[in-house]
Amino acid sequence: MWAVIAVVVVVGLVVGRGGRPTTGTSNDRLYALAGEMKCLQCVGESVANSQAPIAIQMRAEISRQMSQGKTDDEIATYFVDRYGQRVLLNPSGTGFVGVVWIAPVIVVGIGVVGLAFVFRRRRRTPTEVSDEDRDLVARARHSEP
Image (cartoon, rainbow, N blue to C red; front, side, top):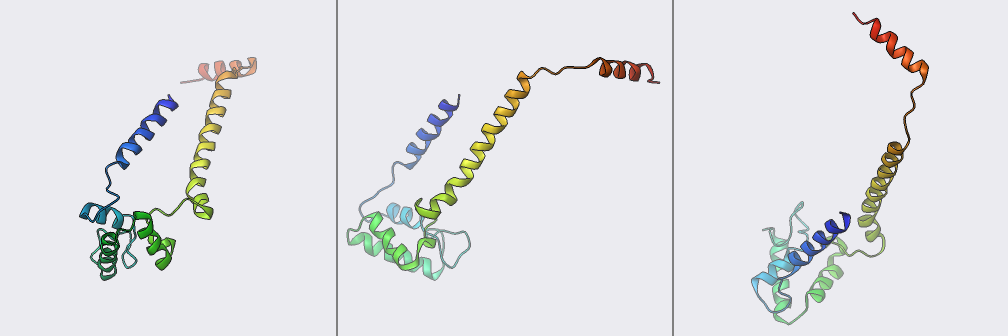
C-alpha cells in the first residue's frame, strides 16, 4: 500500500515538473524563473506575481540575462550572489537548510512508525479480566436503578 502511494507521488511530481522551458526568451520561461524567487519588498509573494518596483527590476534583469543566453542556474546564481539564499522561494537543500527541510519529515515518519508499533503491540496483547473485576461489574449492574 505504501509503495503504491510513493509511486503515485513520484509520478505526480515528475509529470508536474515537466514542460517548463529552460532555454530561449519566452514569457513562460521568464515567469517560471521569476516564480522561483521571492519579492524582497512583499510578504509571501513571488517576483512573478508582484508589482513592487524591485520585482519589476528583477524581472527585467532575468529577461536581460535570458537574452544573453544564460542558463536558469546561472540566472539563479546571479540573484543568490546578489541577495543571498533568502531570494529563493525554494532554497537549496544543502547544509543547515537541508536539515530544516528534512527534519519535520523524519519526525513525522518516526511518529507514524511509533504509533503503528504501539497499536500493533496493543492488539496482540490479550486483555485479561480478573475475577475481582467481573464481580465489581456484576455488583454495579445489580445496583442500577
